[in-house]
Image (tube, rainbow, N blue to C red):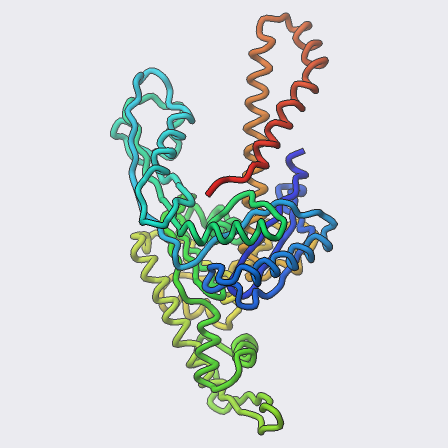
Amino acid sequence: MAENKIIVGLDIGTTKICTIVGRMGEYGKVDILGLGQVPTNGGVTRGVVSNIDKTVNAIIESSAQASKNSNVAINRVHVGIAGAHINSLQHKGMIIRNDAEIEIAQEDLDKLEQDMHKLSVNPGDKIIHVLPQDFTVDNEPGIVDPIGMAGVKLEGNYHIITGQITAAKNIYKCVEKSGIKVSELTLEPLASAHSVLSDEELEAGVALVDIGGGTTDVAIFHENIIRHTAIIPYGGNIITEDIKEGCNVMKNQAELLKTRFGSALADESTENEIVSIPGLRGREPKEISVKNLSMIINARVSEILELVYYEIKSSGLEKKLVGGIVITGGGALLKNVTQLAEYITCLDARIGFPNEHLAKGLVEEVKSPIYATAVGLVLKGLRENSEAYNNFMAEEEVAVEMDYADMSAEDKDRTIKAERREHFFTKFKAWLKDESDIKDF
């Protein structure tokens, strides 16, 4: 039943708002049922909602397209959050347990995590994610999963991500004004990681670089654990603005020049290659040198990648990123961007496509890097739903065994067959109701 649950991902980006509907298919792959995409028309600036009405209208149109394509009524969505207001920090927590003979349980880890949510952060900020790194039990460090161990002193290292309350509330407001409820708010690079990174890369160490329209999001993983996150306030839009100013053309012409003829490496363009673009209102066509165009692009992309490299070095994991760099987002479509990334960082680089985890449906439409975040939101929602369902079923098995522990095997079997269906569905409906509650921010 959990496998058939439908999840909707909503990516509120600087240039576009994208809605993707998906469900878990065979072999752990995801079936994409519907897709809707519309431009934001200035409603979002650098990942932050700047015009409520424009954003609401775009969400309504995008979700309507996805609903029509999938024949699914969209009531709840998993939403991404990004923007220059996002910050991260490392913090350590500790609890002293009363009895060393009692094994460390999930409740102990929950208490540590709850303590992290009580941390003092900058005024106007709120903790979005508390991500465990590793644990120390009685001065024995580097433990990934301490459950079942014995010990008195339990310490945990956590990666904590914060964001502005107002930015998050505006996202909630826009979605709810569209007649939809928010199931979960997720940092966008974490969502993108679900769709474009392999298990091998997460284990070996990899830096995910999501170059969007308004921001470039960085997430660094090592040994299957997120170690560092950062939001760089530059993206594809600033490259377009540079072309607009440098070539003295209109913004839509600058965008076309970037996507069709632009390159992140100026040396790859020849001196005599010229692009002619139409003039305005009968004026003469304008001739643009592809070499000059690439030099403008190279300067800005180099700046962005140097900031990415700074974040990689700041994480202290530069020498441990065996998986190198995975570039995704709309900026990943820029010609020769991986070659420039390798030159600046001295790390291997590849383009991240979100089609590895897709089974069937609208796979061709969403396999572009520009859909990495939206697909990742669907994947993350499906995986969390599946984990919650499996945990629920495991708890039910234990409860059933305890309820009928004193019966004979024959009586137990007969009683379970008679009562289990009603017992299960009562509990399952309660679980579904809990799952559907809106999480407060």
